Image (cartoon, rainbow, N blue to C red):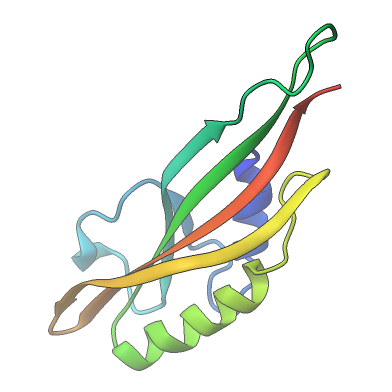
Length: 128
């Protein structure tokens, strides 16, 4: 799994440069006024080996949860739209399948802070 490629891609989104973190959001009072993105919920699952008498080749399916936080719902919605444009069809690990959007959920709303989680999927291949 190429987390660095995912971070780099997210940092191309307006307002997220230097504001992408791997892990879960904590202590929201210290994040400032700009939107933030957290990469969490990373999971890989492998298909069976596709070869019998050769080195293994497997398809690895990756789930990545992108949590966005901002001071207002409008900021979160704008950032979500920009993140989706940046991630859908992006290939973090060629050769492989591009990222697709899977689903989302508003996770937390508090006066002055909104957290929204989006889930993306992609696949890559392990082996020769």
